[in-house]
Amino acid sequence: MYEHRSSTELSLHKVSQSEKCHGRECQTVAMAELDGVPVDPGNLQALALTNYGHFTSMRVDDHKVRGLSLHLDRLVRDCRVVFATELDRQRVRELVRQAVGTRRGSFVVRVTVFDPDLEMGHPGAEAEPRVLVTHRATSAVPLPPLRVKSFPYQRDLPAVKHIGLFGQLRLRREAQRAGFDDALFTDAISGLVSEGGTWNIGFIDEHGRAIWPKADVLPGVTAHLLSEAQGEMVTEPVTLTGLPTIRAAFATNTTVGVRPISVIDGLDLAADHPTLEILRRRYQEIPGEPL
Ligand SMILES: Cc1ncc(COP(=O)(O)O)c(C=O)c1O
View (cartoon, rainbow, N blue to C red):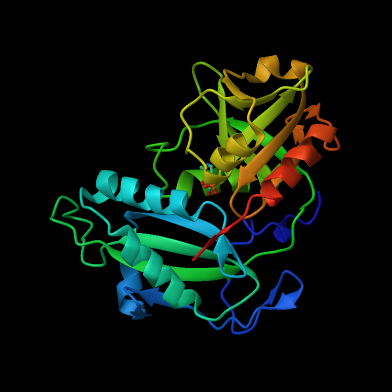
């Protein structure tokens, strides 16, 4: 198994006083601001002990974010579902800009929306969600191909990026302890392939077509941007038993862009399929929006 800790999605939320980012020193000091001021650890207890809320993570490269508007759209949309309140997207953008400050280089910013006062016994109370901005280091891309193990599993509210990650992490752990890098989810009844723990999956079939699986998944910002840039991507049902007609597969998320998948269960896939490199480059060429 390759060193899976090189994947930033797999090396979780490290915040240090001085980090190497993308081969450069990115002048980071620990950044964790709640509504624009350094967060009081007491306010973080709700995340550790109750853990109700939603978030987005976005890769920042020299003050620019690919799909920034889509990340803000996600936060606004999910806030309505999770808290039945309107989030001020311009304010969120300003909070992110302020927290990033003059830091240059590449890193991942996470915006978490939660209410520190919402109690476990009374989640039905009127919520006043607040905005926590944190960051963590990211590594240089491209990363080595992923080897994944499938599990029947569906995330709670698949369209929402909520902070309840236990199910995903439990299966990622099981996959890793079985010698794989990550978990791939399928529908328990239909067998339809859906997504990974923190990524969408796409396939290249025997005719060279790029396919997204038709299933209940998180609408990924990366997948959206890639579809726009590439055109010609179709959405079709994909099952594990149909995989032999698949030549290659890839994972997408904001941190790594497009990452080849070389193994799904016992099936070897062409991690060097030429279309994968085309997709990877196409995504890299998408300009970022300034913060
Ligand atoms: C379950 C799940 N699916 C897909 C994705 C990919 O989303 P994005 O491209 O917006 O990073 C993520 C990202 O963390 C995720 O958690």
